[in-house]
Image (cartoon, rainbow, N blue to C red; front, side, top):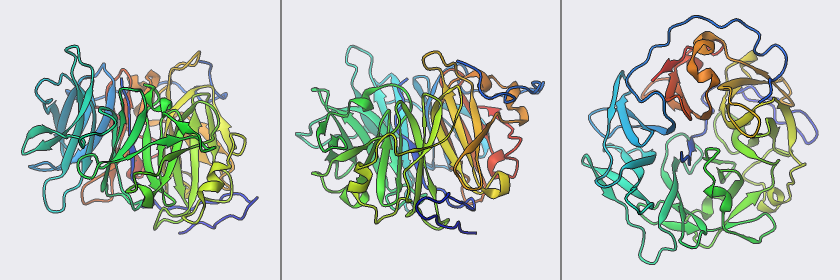
Length: 428
């Protein structure tokens, strides 16, 4: 069923089947008061959490799925190492860092057309040279990806793979890089054409992308409404058709302060050409982008005209929101559900993650702590830097992964299996 598009000034009504999910990618990660009455009132359950052999008491930077042979596997950066396990289950094992590179930082994948998928990783060395470099896995061995001679940057500070059409099959590799001067760039397909883009403020003035240098919160990249959207302490955009044009900068969007992350809510289940943005902040706020909805016809000048006051509040909670994952087609009347994760920030302590269910008019959300075995997990009090949904290969289901700052990696298939109200989490 397709939602009814709202007119300016009207509520946003969404009825979205689950297939309307644009590919999103966590881009970068290095490295309170109680909320509304009743959220934490229930008695904790005494449920044993099954664990496998991934490093538990550490932070997880990124997780992806790739088939590099002989079959699809999950790859996760946990602590300083890259690990892998079969998507069918089993234990995690070290996947190996490149020679001389002792610290794994990020991992991303591009599907291969009948060939093994392309796996990329960013690895650092700690022998006095702190630079981070991009590598590609070729026939089981890591090979360095060399940027073009004369490129203005060398230190790789983030990595992601997105679908340039707004779908769910990645075809474009993105890297954020930093020059010795401190100026930052976005590099599109650094493994091939390596198109560099600078950053600018909403008023057109030059920016060195300083927000991209912060360690928290995690970054995100996504294609929607004909644009690439990129966040990490700030929100930036560039038209998709300009990704191949080196002279086009990414423009910063004015948003409420202390941005955590964002999502895109599509108006139509068949594509991501129309919809609106939802963002969360480290101040515990949740907001939707100014009306009318974004479309491929929305001009850059219209977006540049947004102010921090243009965004509509959907609700707030006394936590620091670090990331948000949108799961359409589930929850109350199939309206969809946001999974909003928290970290410690200022005087706000981490508290795992929350459900945020939209009202029928999409003008507000109701926060609730998840049920199921979640309340007996160590994830409940952990800082959750990011949440990622990865589809099953050749099937309708999928797994939601929670990336924590100190309690390893957690996973659940419940949200795509009709058990979204009582998700069963497993400590990976």
